[in-house]
Image (cartoon, rainbow, N blue to C red; front, side, top):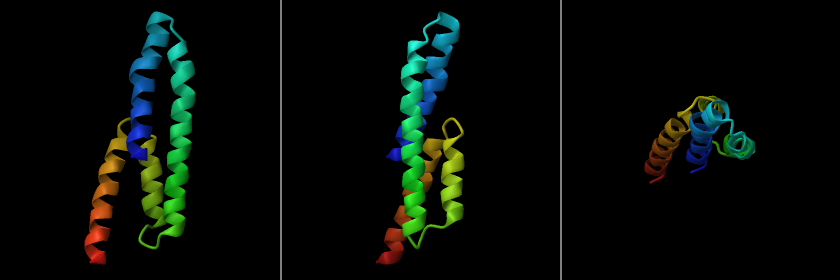
Length: 95
């Protein structure tokens, strides 16, 4: 969920707010979406760090990959898919 929120705020910022600022002179979108995306990214990074620090099934490499994907537009959605598949594998292994 957090990866989708982070990915969505980045895409809205880059695909809607920034073009409106430069093409239409409307800077309010960037002034609103910039801090919202910043908060979403920091919250996501914090959750990933907490997950990799506390769970034995998650490596630091997994955490670094998830944070790196969050810096790429659309990467948050790919991270969500990776997280879902890893969680499914962990649930299956726990049975």
